[in-house]
Amino acid sequence: MRRGFKAEAERTAEAIRTEMGKRASDPLDAVDLARHIGAEVRCADELTSLEKLETLEDLQPGAFSACTFSIGDRHVIVYSPLASAGRTQSDISHEVAHIVLKHEMKSVETLGSMSFFTCDPEEEQEANWLAGCFLLPRRLLYIAARRGLDAAGIAATYTVSEQMAAYRLRTTGVMRQLKAQQT
Ligand SMILES: [Zn+2]
Image (cartoon, rainbow, N blue to C red; front, side, top):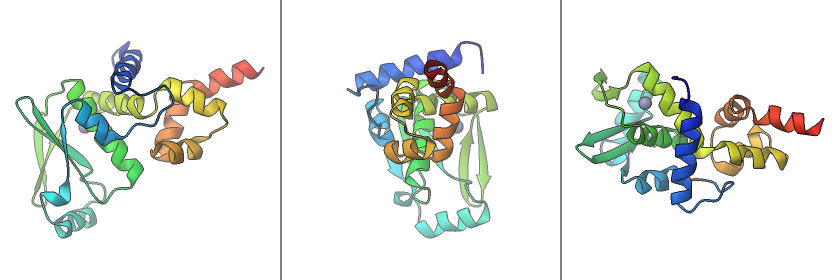
């Protein structure tokens, strides 16, 4: 990720959360976030059959999580009904991040009978990072960790995967900051 991107992403996420009327430690619903930035959200089973999605999942687990169809300024985020609630939150936030960062969908891949748009790896990293900032901004993590919540507690409170909570606690330096203050 380019220099300065991480701090910029924290600020972007904080600004959008504030526009949505969220306080620092409020949980965020990714569907609300998507609607706030003007995107539509559809569950994939509205567009294709659940059987087809299940077949695809058997073929390649996790192959389809979410994607965005963009026509001009109109963005439709489609997510899989087969993922956990926490995973869905990060998948939708990831798609929102692509839209906010104005990433262009570059190529189309097909798997089974379905097509996927993919971005370049650098843009994927950026979208992942910004998605984490939306759901678990640094200030929220700091408040939660000070209250004694660990990754599992944060995952349960904010409907994110435990993996994301642990990753954000580690990479934002929040745990380090708290430890430094205790000594
Ligand atoms: Zn992506």
